[in-house]
Every structure is written in C-alpha cells, then in structure tokens.
Length: 307
Image 1 (cartoon, rainbow, N blue to C red):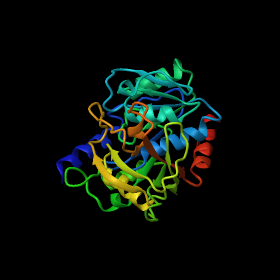
Image 2 (image 1 turned 120 degrees about the horizontal axis):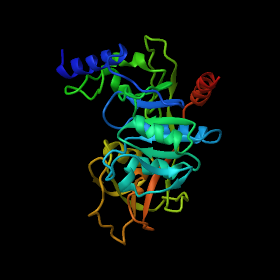
Image 3 (image 1 turned 90 degrees about the horizontal axis):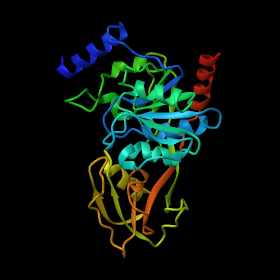
Image 4 (image 1 turned 180 degrees about the horizontal axis):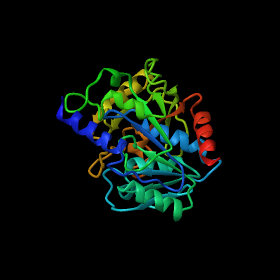
C-alpha cells in the first residue's frame, strides 16, 4: 500500500479509537472540507452558510490563515468590521470577512485555541471551520464534505490529488457535490449520507464599488493566483468575455511587484482583488451559490444540538 495512505489511515484509526485526542468547544462546530488538493469551492460554501446563519446567531468563521504574515490568534473581523490587513489574515479569510456583514472571522493555526477565543472573547455562538475535514483535533457537530467529480476516480497522494482515500467519505455528515454548473453529475454513496448539489449562478463582472459592469465591447487582461487558473480563464471565455491576455500566478500570490497599465482593463477573482490597491480599471468575477436543502439540513441539526 502507498506509504502516504498507510500514514493517513493510521492517523484516522488513532483518532477513531481515541488514542489521539480531539477537543470539544463549548459551542457547535460545522466543518467544511474536501478530499482533494486544489479548488473545490470550500471558501464559497463557507460564505454561503455563514451568510444564511449570521442572520439568526453570531457566527464565527475559523480558519488557519494560510500564508499569512501573522502568528497565533488574529481577529480578522468582528461582526462584519474588518480589523486587520489581508497580509495578517491570509487572502481567503480576508476575502470572507469582506463578504460577511454580521459574522466574525478568526485565524489561528491552533483551531481549538482560536475557537475558544471566538466563543469566550468574541461571544460567538457557532463556529464554521474552514477546510476542516482533515483537522480532527477539533471535534465538530457537522462534517460537510465537498466532492468534485474527479475525486471519485482519483488516488491518494503522491500518485493522485486525494488527501485521504475515498473511503474517508464515511466520516461525513453530508456530501456536497460541487461544480454542478460545469456539468451536472450525481453520486450514490454507499453509506446513505445525505447528499446535496452545489451550483454557481448569476455570474457577473463587478467593479470596486460592487456595481455590475457591462462587458460588451470591452477587452480585458485576465489574471489570477489560484490552484487552477485555467478554470477561471475558461469561465470568462464561456461567458463571452473578450480576453486580450491571460496571466497565471501561483496560488495565494502576493502581487507585491505586479504593475497595472493605466490604458488596460483587468479582470480577476475576488480572492485576488482584495489584495490589490483600489484601481478603477480592475474588476472581479462574482457569482451566487445555490445548494438546495443544505441550510435547512444545517438548521435542523443545529436545533437538535441546542435542544
């Protein structure tokens, strides 16, 4: 067997049997994660859930803050008010904070410590754990697992892109089948786990003030720093947006030496947009998410926990 798979299976076994300890927070935890490397829509799903639940309770999104410059516990935002820079927060937590009007966002490499801080110091009533499926040190009340169609035919690292074998699906409370808008697909899981489909819709190009822009007659330089930049460029082309040029950067790129030409118009992702200074000639691609039945499923589980 693949040595990586052996190590992952052993770690999961030790957690399952209690030899490795998991720690429980005094408030409910909803984990959103996936099985594979690369983009699967985790961040979008976290925002989607938080946007719905922030209306009824104090939600705190808890993230590691990948590639941030800070250390330990950092409050990115408190009930919608941003309190630090994207460099201190990490690009994805900062982006989430910019989209959530009433929720808080905290980053900490020790998710249990960060969760305790959110509960005791910020008064959070519910934690949404970003990218949490493999983070078993923190107990969760719901484990939401995103699957891409490619995951079903992939292999664990280093021969494939799976962070865990496909059989780890059985730990999930619910499965979310992502990228249905690219090609609708289904999966009849052998464990009887509730399954939902995730669609991205209402695609639009947005300016720095949040206004939708008419792209007819315009030509853009497209750039991004994602795990899969080609998918972003392909989406733009499918929308009929004319691209003069495409620029690919590594995931979580900092853009410190990136120079914009004043006579060009640029288009990027929101994750990249939040890292740039305000420029009237830079736009970002935005969309809405639809996952029918998922919020009702979460609310039902949350009430059961509370009751």
